[in-house]
Structures are given as structure tokens and as C-alpha cells.
Length: 173
Image 1 (cartoon, one colour):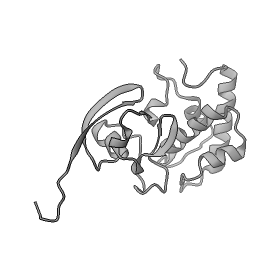
Image 2 (cartoon, one colour):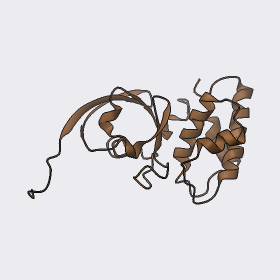
Image 3 (cartoon, rainbow, N blue to C red):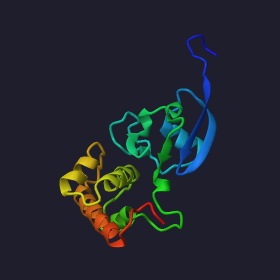
Image 4 (cartoon, helix red, strand yellow):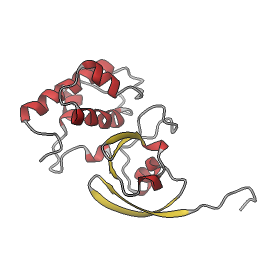
């Protein structure tokens, strides 16, 4: 080992990911995004800029959207994390947002989509009938190079109506 290299330290973490308890021994410098992708094989969480600028790595931490590339895995100890893999219902039915994104062509390349869906799910949990400005504010900080923002707004508002017709929260079975 070169004299300038710092030793890697590990720490035991315990958290919930998509409703399931997880325990692991992780390097202290590992980000939550790296942990989800490399240790749990939850590759729906994308790493784009790896600097907290693009939003593609967004997950919910205790129901709050966070850029997982800016959170250390050890900081998630005791927290509840929800990734894009945890958005669909346990019976395999798509979340209304996912279905509306398909219906409204709200993505092209799809790289930004997981992070957008997570942030928009948090929006709909807080504001079941969002206005266009609410949707645009929720995805502020998410970069979509394909320019699908108008369709993302349409899809989110459609999902809101779908959820209202069902008369229940999207997370319920």
C-alpha cells in the first residue's frame, strides 16, 4: 500500500430498504447510491453526475427525496429507504405514476426516470392533487436531457387523477 493511501474503515449498518431489513458491513466512505447498486443489486437507482446535481440517484429516506450519491451509507443507519424497485406494489401492479409515465410518453432514454418517479411519488404523497407548478418544483434539480418535462407534468397529473379515482393511497394494496 502506498504511504499516501488511507486505510479503509468499515462500519456495520442496519436499515430498511423497500420495507425489508438490511444489515451490512460497509466502507465508511461508500455512498448510499453505491451501497444500493453494488451491495444490494438495486440498479434502478442511477448514478449520473455523482455530485448531487442531476437527480438520477434520488431515493426516499424516511419519505423525503434525497440524492443518494451525497449520502454516506453509514448515514442511512436506522432509516427507511425506498428505491424505484420499491415503488410498484408488492403484487407487481405498477404504481399509478409508472403507468402514467408509460401512457404519456414521459421518458425517452429513461436514465432520469427512476429519480423523477421517486420525487414525484413523494409529491403525490404530500399533495394528492398537484398543480403544474407543484410538479415542476418537485422535479427541479432533476436533469432530463431528452426534454420530456411537459409529458412528465401531464403524467403526474394523470397519476393524481388515477389515484383519486381509486380512492386510496398508491402505497396501499
